[in-house]
Length: 94
Image (cartoon, rainbow, N blue to C red; front, side):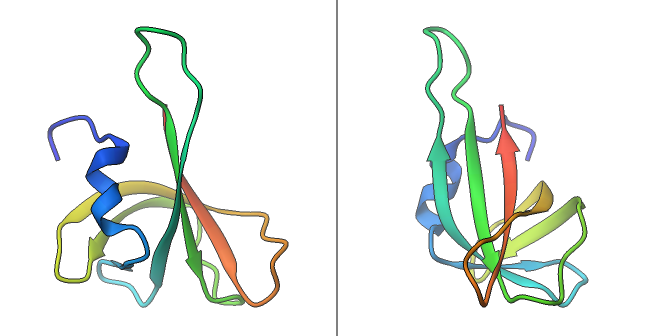
């Protein structure tokens, strides 16, 4: 996408599955975290995706395609996941 992505681009896709283009991973957009910003600053946010444990998607730039929806090019990284039975990932926008 040529335009700057905002949290609003992702809100309609919360709890939906995003598939890694050309890959085997499928991640659910489980949460959109908003950060407090000073007036006039671009709104920073963080996307939290959830996937299965074990087969971890490595940190990198991927095209993630929403089932029956658009595709987004995102830099995704695995993060510490204390909840058993899943692996979380983040895509940070600041």
